Length: 187
Image (spheres, one colour):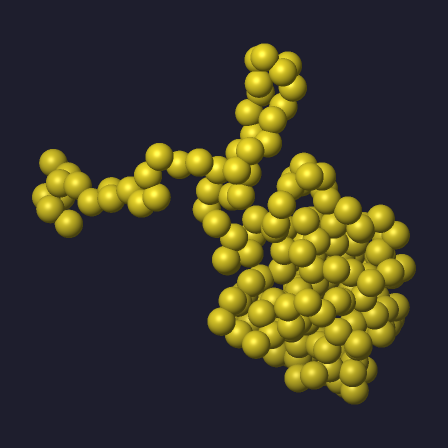
């Protein structure tokens, strides 16, 4: 595994923000700038001594208190060398990241999911639209500041015979769930 780290660092190190490290689970990890993403992903895929030819996932993590609020994470697999690499791109809210659909066609689905859940825009994506939520959905549900109840509730109106969207109207703003448990006693 250490040879893989040295190799990736040597060949791709010029465009990495930090050196490649090995996590406790054996996965290689590196942090990249958004501007270096396409070059790095292409190099990892095409280099004969790394062969990270499979994109297994793209996802985002919301660190609300951080200046660079999001990490967009790319997971690549090299079957030839039995290695995985995790490339993290820190991203300030409102900034875009380049699409990697030109390098991995399967990235289209993953990028659409990240866009739908977090609102992160992928520049150059051929079809960036919602994939999991309704097209009229307001907001992005995986953001840490998204309200637990959402903004709208959906119901079927029997008189109008159609689906109706209306603002969430809860009878109680706050519910106190502190209770005496017969098994644990008072909390």
